Amino acid sequence: MKLAYYFQYVQWFYLTWKGYGTLSSKSTIPTQYLNNVQLTYSLNNEKYNISLEAENIFDRTVYDNYMMQKPGRSYFLKLRIFIN
Image (cartoon, rainbow, N blue to C red):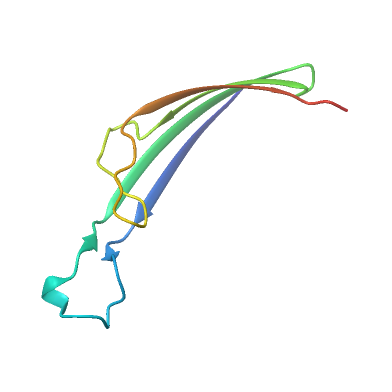
């Protein structure tokens, strides 16, 4: 069984090139802090894996590189079979 914690930090940045227009009129992507956890259970020498994952566990507002809002808190169940 494995427990993993992921932290992602993104410092604010301009949506478009800094040199275009005036800085006061520029749109910015805000600083973001994203926290994820994952629990993985392996069977039969890691041939079978079952994972539970929770992303954005504190339900913060986060954006992609084009100022599109990403989903809030989300949960995933992953099943993996290694075929040899």
